Image (tube, rainbow, N blue to C red):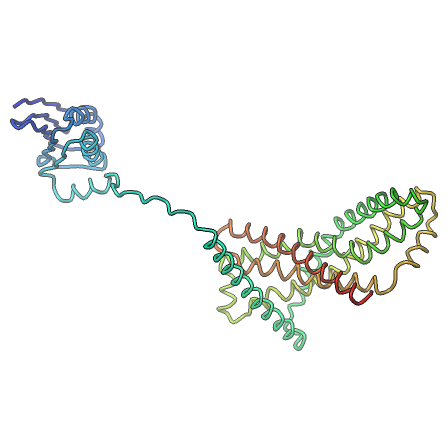
Length: 379
């Protein structure tokens, strides 16, 4: 039998080789952070030296063991198993065994990742998610229509102060950027239209092109898109933050309908401001086109007369009607994405992004339906 002793302050480590060839490590004393650090190298060397032979740790004389000591015992066991030998811990108190088990690395086998779903499974999940989205959209639309009808029947239920404040933020706040974008749009459109018309000496018809396109199509469309990026995302972020903070649940608990309390004021405000923003976009676009028109050598009165002769009253009315519908879509989609917000700050960001993307898509679809309807009606 061979014996080697390593003694440090507060703990003693003896290394013994039994007659059967088993490697025996005897520990006694206090296995605290200080003594464990001094014994660690000798203990690990003895554990590795056991190789594929059985390694027995006699710990009956250990009267104290903290997390560091438990980590030492767990490391000895791991080194023995890596060497291919059998490990056995003897004599350690039951409470200290539980501590060692807590710090020991998990030996559970990690399950391989599941295979990626097939195309059919992904298609089915997409179909289910689309159905859920449609269900939420129809449900939200129904709730919003009922709330709007209730406000029309009982105007006092409308939170007029909040509606005016939202209209002010969405309308007056967006006016500078709407006017600037409309002016540049009219300027660019006039320049681009003058290039092909110049080949036929028809630059005078630039005013016709500009008046019809701005008042009937581009003015409402650009105003709605800008409102989506500016106010639709704000609606989604505001309501989404309320959802994360459980304020919407609090409204429901207090007997207040979230749709009537939060959605209706924003929808009515958007309906009111988008036609005004579309008018501002169209007029600023015409002003930008006028500068190009004058640079082509035509007077201002000719520009005005061409627009008056080309643009009919229904073109202006149709543009304002589209702007009103676009406003409903922008506010409705923004509020819907806000109500659908999940939990956490990331969910608010996702809802904001989804509100902008969904709002622009809804505007494009609605504009296409308006174009087809006007063509069928011949107007």
